[in-house]
Length: 426
Image 1 (tube, helix red, strand yellow):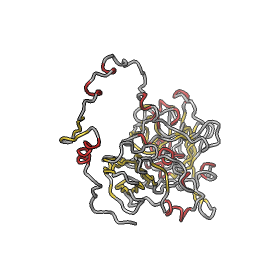
Image 2 (cartoon, helix red, strand yellow; image 1 turned 180 degrees about the vertical axis):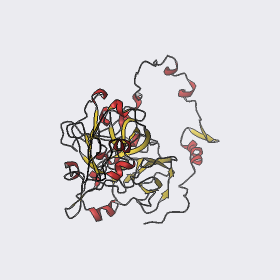
Image 3 (cartoon, helix red, strand yellow; image 1 turned 180 degrees about the horizontal axis):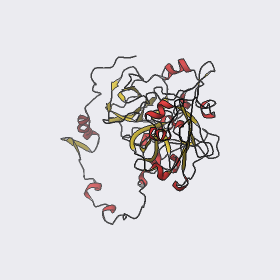
Image 4 (spheres, one colour; image 1 turned 90 degrees about the vertical axis):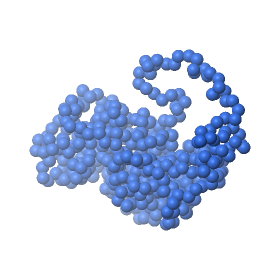
């Protein structure tokens, strides 16, 4: 591994120096950090149409929606990815977002049998099995319990899965977009289990959803009592239909299929249930054909979201903000390094402060681009000391037959015209 420079180098001219130099090429000159036009700009000197009339009233959009200029910032699917008549997977537009909180309206979805409509009045949650008192809760019952709000990422175990055999999909939305990050509000699962009274031999729980698939998953009791939430709000509002309205499970840091939506039943048992979703699915196929299971934790991962194939550099050489996301199911991200030469040298990025445990972290690296080609990469380090590996390091252990848990370093080839492409470096 290349050594990290102790100081951040200057890449070409300073940002302010670039603005001053741009006078020779056109319209701007920098004075005290501000840019001024040499010739009158009608967008500044003339009254524009939008300043001559009244705008929309507050009742024009009863539920606020993005302005029409941002209608391309949407979840997208890959038609060939699933055989369903209706696509069951779509991807968060992480390339077009900033900060860390994912708007609910464009947050990643995964459906095993489609999104169902379940009214609060019809909702029931049963806890049974190895408990002192089997219980059934209504939605109104759940609202009476003490609640918490926490920010966590949800990542599908198959995120980046198509990239195991090589560069496949051209864009961070498609290679890494099976993830979202929201503020979830709900009841610590521990409180509901305590209400039912878990018997000493109760070591596992089975969680099921109310949809046709039920998506049953086994979870160790230690995790259930630690930080799981029975959630009914996300980003301050009721869960969206596609995110499990009215109630879902939140399993921080663990693969997304365990975050069961439309949560209807929790059974306490003395061993795992070995359901379809944890035997034939969501196990890691190794190079020798064997399958590794119980790989619940999502290891440290990162990706540059801009520049990237869906976010090319359109302004030409000059100041460029390289930005992206990093996350770890084991804790917080403590450092992100950025490389512009395919991993030969690394430079420490700025981490947005105040990020949460088991949540997305935003990083920035301010660069003055000289127009030459770049092989952009990012590499995350988490609070346990784990360093994000290369794809080749993962393949040396896992082979090429895997689908799940690909957290290898991603490479974007940024060309001299600013366009970017998904590539791999050896």
